[in-house]
Amino acid sequence: MPELNQRMRSLFSFNLFSVLVCIGLGFSAQAQNVQITLGPDEIGENQGWTITVTVHNERLKSYDNFPDIEGFRKRGTSNQSMTSMMNGQVSSSQSVIMNYASVRQGLINVPSFTMKVNDKPITVNGKKVKVGPPVQQRDPFKSFFDKPDDFFGRGETEYVDIKDDAFVALTTSKDEVYVGEGFTTTISFFVSDDNQAQLTFYKVANQLAEILKKVKPADCWEEDFQIENIEGESVMLNGKRYNQYKIYQSTLYPLNAEPVVFPAFDLQMIKYKVAKNPSAFGPNRKEDFKTFTSKPKTVRVKELPPHPLRDVVAVGDYHLDEHMRTTNLETGISTGYEFNVYGEGNISAIEKPIMKSNNNFEFYEPNVRQNINREQNRVTGTKSFGYFLIPKEPGQFNMGDYFQWVFFNPKQKRYDTLRSQLSVNVKGESRKNEVIQSSDMGNFYDQITTTDNQLQMMSDTRWQRWAFNGFIIVILGLSVFFLFRKSHA
Image (cartoon, rainbow, N blue to C red):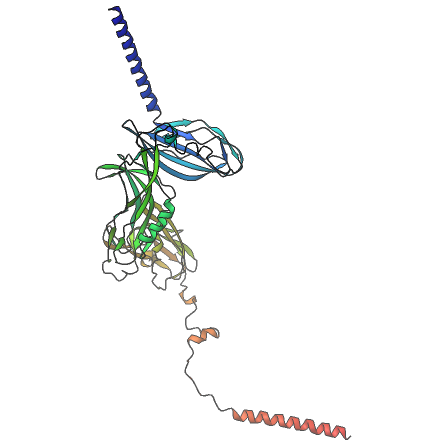
């Protein structure tokens, strides 16, 4: 009986110890859910250096900007997702990697920094990185680990293909637009939160160039968002959460009423097969490829409603911002006026207001500048027309009688007019008579446009030629006479 009690106490102690160990491991795993890993302590000048943020068994929702390091320059980020299977248990991880390139050889100081990952601050201790001469990269242990399974006498490693939950798609912000109305086009790769397969992008720039040759429409004006880094963004699709990786985005403006057709295209991804029986030696995954195919997409285009300016008006949601130094003017003295059109639409296609000829002001051609913003799936901006004008007549004038700009608003489905709201008071004497009249003949070249171009017969001037020839003969005769007389003197 005492031996039995002793065994029970030993078993209880062992179980309690096991529980405490498991709890401790649980806390350790939770603390290690987010890792930030620095690159090696020593690299060659031709080798890259990295900072890697890894999240285990959860989704990488957000992270701060990677630090700027003196001696390194950023080369852009890449993303990785990994899945491993051990004894029937599947674990996953997501990583974002910032790649750095050295700008010089020597010792580079990487200072300590803090990054917020998934809204949790993570502090990383700095280090010294030695950058040496360029090296020839090779793996001296490759031959040793070429066939680890054979080394331990287990034969070839068996790899299994894990079903992926991902797709590639071309999406548009609108399914139907007017001629000239913009719609945003995005090419993205979507990965479900439930996905367990390991997927990595493969030569995205080269593939995207070929994809755009195939899908980019010819009869559209394009405003490219210039995506430089591929970063995941959490989205909901049909009640399911995905990470969206945008590889191309632009806003297109149809130039005619033909439908905009985007054909299907292929995107090749690296997909890893994982070892059925992972081991501590040798590779536990095998690189393979999978081609994802998009669905075709068509955007319908409608003609603008009838209007005298239908073929020339801009299309968008626009507003007017105008500026004038003073509204108290004097005849003969110039002043400045700015007519600024701002809003959402094809800013590049905005034309200057159509000016009406008048005798009250002299208007000069405007100075034009524009500012375009491409962000948050929208293209917005401002186009400014800076005028100089000279009043010629005194009086009270509404600038809206001279500055008007017609556009079509697709949201309200009607034409609208931006009209100046300023009123100016002009003092002084009339100056319209000081203007050079168009009837002034001017110099020789100015008369070209007013001279009669019909052929006319020239008057008879033959008697002038006979008289001139006779005069020449008389002169020659007198010269011969005087020379002959002088030689006989």
